[in-house]
Image (cartoon, rainbow, N blue to C red; front, side):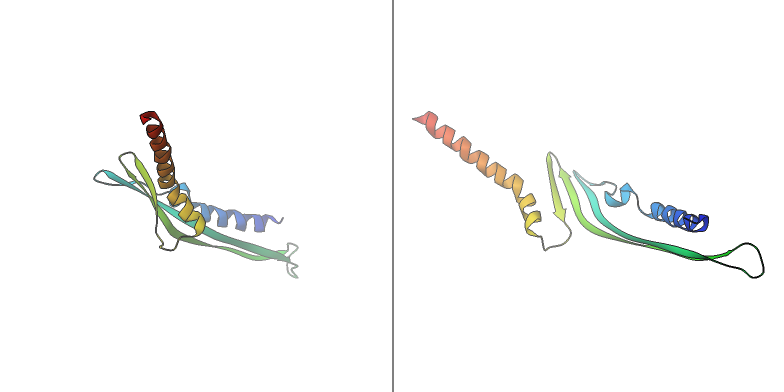
Length: 127
């Protein structure tokens, strides 16, 4: 790989790193009274670079032409809500897919199943 192309890619990646870090995905906690909100985001990015050496009629060195670029999209996805001992994921969008619905319902479903088993144990001990 040409040193010039490597330089373009290094500069582009360094600029991209300055925009995107772990705090961009899981944001800083926001405290409101007894509730803590933690923003969660999705990041998508693309990177392109290229170049070519050209022969020169006027010097012994070859000429180089190239460029690079990157694009970043940051989309808010959800908030993690912490209140006392309860932790919930609150999606930003209203339409949830089946997997998201199942994950959100899991704690509730677990509590209901647990209460059914406990209810059955109480009925057995009463007899």
